[in-house]
Image (cartoon, rainbow, N blue to C red):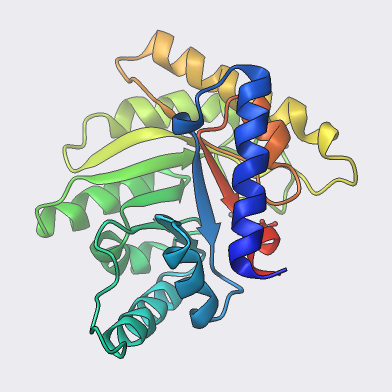
Length: 236
Ligand SMILES: *Cc1c(COP(=O)(O)O)cnc(C)c1O
């Protein structure tokens, strides 16, 4: 199957799942993760209606943005990349990449320290932007994973709330790799509960839960995901 069929299949899966569990389809964003995709495939995805794309690396996103622009500009009709397309940063963000990141990303999912929110505030301010971010939480406690510990999250969010040029929209997590997707459920549930707790204990109104990938997105949607990040199931 090609990229377009893969997207249609996933959209249908999400749609019937929403109907079954009583969630609105409009609450869920299908984010296409392009880190392993060819540019031609990314264009197929966009032309099939994908409005949100995600990359792990700032430099890769810049390169792909330029290549995509060339693809569209070379068409006989000389189109541009749809300007409604949203770019998401989902990989670990290094401080020295923040300056470029705030220029290109609509939403940065992988913010995991006060130091980083401070730098994001500083660089966003320089370009008169309020940068939307998510706080990455290490719900499984695995040492190999980035993200704040759940009990550190509130403190970082409270302090970040004082920064005028960053806006915390929600939380993000990556579940452990397991054979049975059902076993990811506790981590997604933990993230949802943490979001509710933060909304109760602070002035924040977090709305986004970025959780679920190719293998486990259905469980994540059952547990309240509003963005699912899907790579291999689209571009395999
Ligand atoms: C690669 C990646 C994804 C997509 O993973 P798939 O299993 O290919 O769907 C989602 N989120 C993050 C943070 C990733 O690095």
